[in-house]
Picture 1 (cartoon, rainbow, N blue to C red):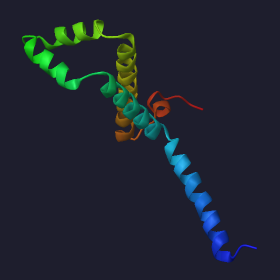
Picture 2: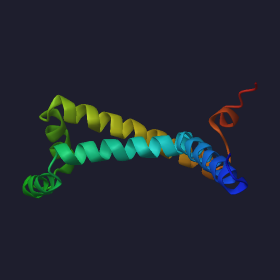
Picture 3: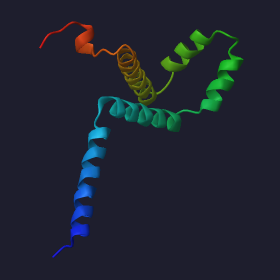
Picture 4: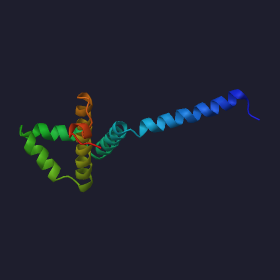
Length: 112
């Protein structure tokens, strides 16, 4: 038979696990983790040093450089960049709404 202290530890372990899972499934935390995962995937497939070296040698037209670099990159890199951009936009949207104290439903005046 378990002692009272062992029983308490078992219950508190479950409580902490449930709390951690609830925090991890919040939309902001999930989107931030997704952003970090895509960023790690991007950094593992692309050399940042070479991007900046090529950008500096391109002559100053940064927008042309990035459009040319994007159009000439591999499909996997394009997909990661697009997904990263989408997640970044949704994170920014959530940050703006949270700073204003509104949710998307409240901002659009949608009733239940």
